Image (cartoon, rainbow over all chains, first blue to last red; front, side):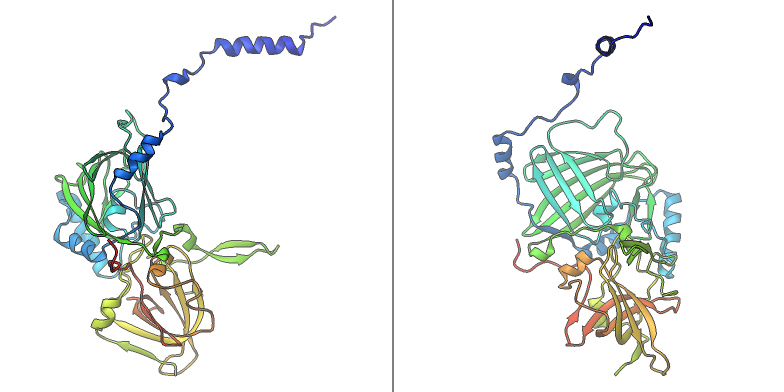
Length: 276
Length: 135
């Protein structure tokens, strides 16, 4: 009679094998504890950053010309070329691929609004455009990870000094631009470190004081400030902004389904006037 | 009356109302900010889409001839909403007067400056300044 192990015997053996493997020590993995009522109540003592924050475009323009980044000499030469191309009407398209502006360009050059959420242990910035404009700033006392995955917005930890949120950001992708406009800016090329002090500077006015250290693009730490203005109308709330949607038009397929079809763009990234 | 009027110099009042460079998607430097073209015609399409809203408008040339299609790029739906627009501000067939900074390359396109609707309403674009009375 052939040996046919019973199902229960197989399961028993499998069980032994699985037990033999070292089980993950769940208690050793970092976890976020459930917030307590006290944690939620403590949010009430934070400053009021509610509403919709719209970048002050006038000040943004002034900052770009009065306090430009201290580029390294080689990057400065590239930026002069980029500025000449922009002035001639042939701008480089830093963001026409619809990848996120990321850090620090979101703070520096965005024309779109953001909102700021406080929850226990975290401040969250949400923005329009890019399709995924999101910053998480951990305020629960955790350090940066030892080897964080680089991302467009980096890894941010923060703490409150009075009514000022001090934010420390590392692990930003080297390809992410330090931008002065949609067509003038340089990749940070890695090892960028950003410290921000975000605070109310007056009624309905939020300042982000940035200190940007980018040793491969800047000759020294660049200090600059960007201003955001509060709006409270319901219509002012941030809206969905899927950048890639602009590359498509609404149409119908052969089966009558609603589908997106590509639309032509010119080299500058605007809707091509030709072939309409 | 349909007309296509080109001003060789920047109009200060229109410059103040200009949307300027808009959105994250692309620069507006391909448009000439020193010129303003007024497109008076019939809307063919109003595309309420990120990252840039666009207007396609049929314009009868001042010199005569068949209407020509022009494409106008604006800022994002979010920014336009904050400036009082909705996705139904324009509809195909609407008469409209659209002021633009034209493409430098001479093609029939431009960056949005101002809209005057058939009923005389004026719309501008761009990020708003401070909201009065909000602290």
